[in-house]
Amino acid sequence: MPILYLCILTDIVFVALNVLYELHPAVTDPALQIAQDRGYSEVFQYIKEFWIAGTLMFFAWRRRSALYLAWSGLFFYLLLDDSLRIHENWSKAPYFPSLFGLNSHASGEIIIAAAVGMSFLGLIAIAYRSAPPFERTVSKFLTWLLFSLAFLGVFIDGLHSIIQVTLLDPVFTTLEDGGEMLVMSLTLSFILLLTERVRQI
Image (cartoon, rainbow, N blue to C red; front, side, top):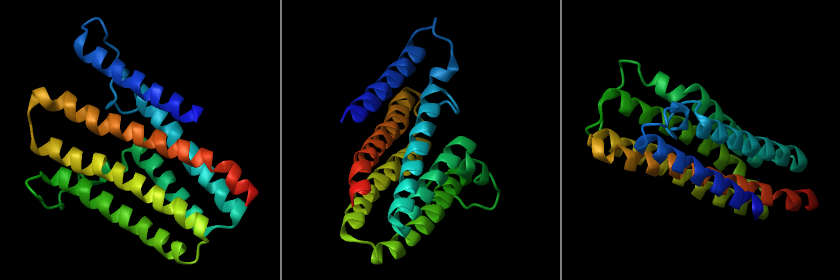
């Protein structure tokens, strides 16, 4: 699986550059930070999300599959959300309550992410009922990867909002953003490995 190794190697390089930025005063380019919006690692993440969504769209067209179409829509949303900061911007509305010791902004992010996620999962569940066995197997694996992303992006991010310890910021950043990068690389590799199989079915 060369694509997997290349993606993970690239992710590790970006994490190492982030550490270098944090520790070496001569390194001053903020785009090297893995948490930087539209930084180098973020752009690479956008590319992976676009490739995943586009490949799943091809699967949907090839197999006339509502299940692949629903998954493609989910990853296209993730691409838009990451690049346009949809849930971060919408969560600034003043009417979100404070939950679990989080401020209203952090609570809003969780509420929006949960609402969008459940909506897409609902569509996926409906399409899953009439999907063939192979597509169901693919969907189950994608669901585990999605839950891994949710754990990193929601739970770890929420924990970071609660535990305001400056010394732990690099740890939380690496766990959340670095973890999301690795999960997306696994997802892309998995989807690309299926391409030949889908074309043959």
